[in-house]
Length: 373
Image 1 (cartoon, one colour):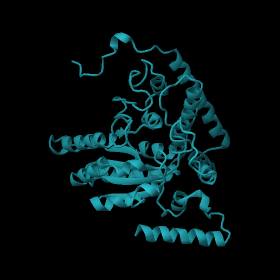
Image 2 (cartoon, one colour; image 1 turned 30 degrees about the vertical axis):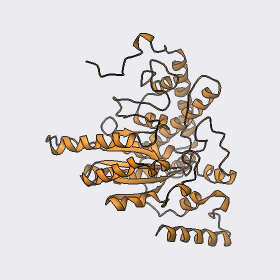
Image 3 (cartoon, helix red, strand yellow; image 1 turned 120 degrees about the vertical axis):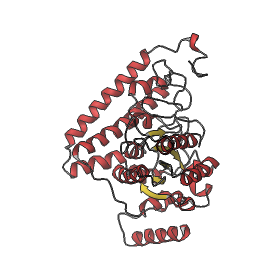
Image 4 (cartoon, helix red, strand yellow; image 1 turned 60 degrees about the horizontal axis):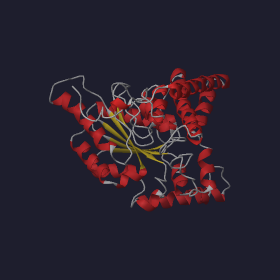
């Protein structure tokens, strides 16, 4: 079936090219672009003006925070591996802002800064953590890849792929156990587990899909498919590149969605959350997206073709949402510029705060290793 779909999409693209269509996908843009262009239409979320501006503000914060991280890294103020989220903001905002903050639970990856911000972790705490300061959300011990906040129900970022999925599964199991075994009728929390296309080739992914389906657990498996994992083309690494179809093998709902369209992601997330709260079990949600930077700030990003990058740059999720808000009468250009200024002030403040924050005290070197009384 996947081969048939791929062939059909290729034929459609060739037909468009022959007809001179503006939507034709150049061969240099790659198969990921072809698949994105051939997505089945999905029902986007309906939003008010206030909701639209909230989504725009959250995505803008994520983008400009990451840009500032790059600046600080290259200035030698930030150390270690730093993996940025530029281009994928519609996934974080689309899923997390469709859920209940400080009620539902979230599990991230090593690309976790923007997930943390969407969960409500203050920008000061996130930036402080990246600087290894005591005011960081992980007390300066986690750094870029290990953000954690119990208060904001962020169950962590993880340096190795797949590590967070079993943790997320445990949170979903807890929610179901409290309701079914302990009689807590108000226990309806849903968990979202974020991970990339490369993770879908490791054992934890399949084991957790199986258990989630068996127990009808309230969990969203959110695949941020940006095609390249670290540096391997997704299509060369898996027997079936359409990850969402693997849901059928576990008797769960699966959906593919435009990961560059925040309203498409939000709509899919809302449907999945509704099913989960109703006791109908998990959903495998594959978001076709693209990272605008290399795998990490240490990556020269030489593997990807310029035409491929250009294809996705034209589909910038923040610019798309901004244009839609203006077209729908939900905002003016001046409103969006004002949000940008507000976010720039927030980012400047969090850097100033983090630079001035104290280092962790050496007397606490062994703290947070063992459970405390």
